Image (cartoon, rainbow, N blue to C red; front, side, top):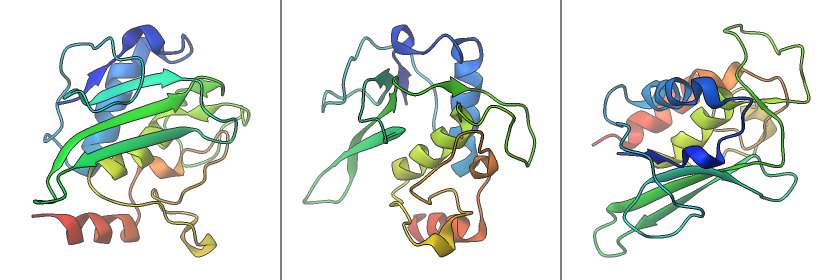
Length: 161
């Protein structure tokens, strides 16, 4: 179960933030992630709350996901995602093409990438993976990472119980 700190959500995405985040989670495994009540968490920390929030991050960072796990069992204990409130956010219409506002980052595009970390995947950094959701870089106006590529699906399936 994930919880949103609604007070940190930028106004540019506030109207549809719940549906976009749910859609991003469902891209990985439809139905296993559910939204809980809102949280007041202001930072990522191990507190038994899977928090999603916005705060100031380094200028070149769009989002960061923190995963806490048991070293004995390997079980994931908690996951938090923080999006950068220093960059402009948007929710673009469904389209396979980049959008007309390249200075803004599509929330669903970036959230789908970040939630790939929730299922255990790492960033891909080789330029040959640039079209995959788990590629560690994104561009303003980009929407292609809303859906999974073959490599993302293979990675997800390799981790599935």
